[in-house]
Amino acid sequence: MITNTLTTLRVTRLHLLHLIENLTTEQLNKVPAGFNNNIIWNVAHAISAQQGVCYTRANVPFIVDDKYYTPYRPDTKPSGFIDSAEVDIIKGLLISTIDKLEIDYNNHVFDNYTPWATRYGVQINNIEEAVNFVPFHDGMHIGYVMALRKLV
Image 1 (tube, rainbow, N blue to C red):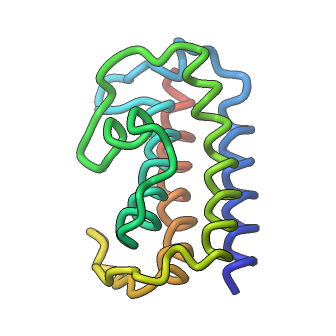
Image 2 (image 1 turned 90 degrees about the horizontal axis):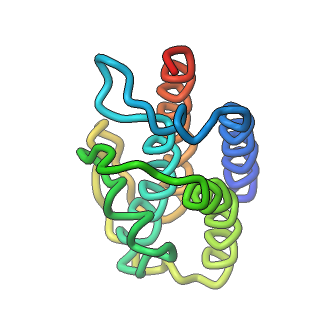
């Protein structure tokens, strides 16, 4: 059931917020040697990816400002320093985008979902499968955040 997946997604995103709560803005922005991104990029990428997987693939406009979508798409990297005000907005979007996703799902805005295959070979045919994919993707980036935390 999608409600269970949304609950899992909220819990994992709250865990991600907990992982970064005591880090400074400088730590969130630091790109350690050997890496091509930073902690705040990974956090914002989770938001961007969820928007792409759920909204864009359903031919529905994404619900965040484009500055929280396009710069964090796959194959991008940090393009500048993210200040504390923007960090706070990104943190808020982690949960608010899931709340809006649930509302939009219940209002059937994803009924014209276009099937596709992820870069990991996962076939996604409908919004339920898309929502089920998001915690997997977030989990990978939580792993990156955990590794980056040790280096900042």
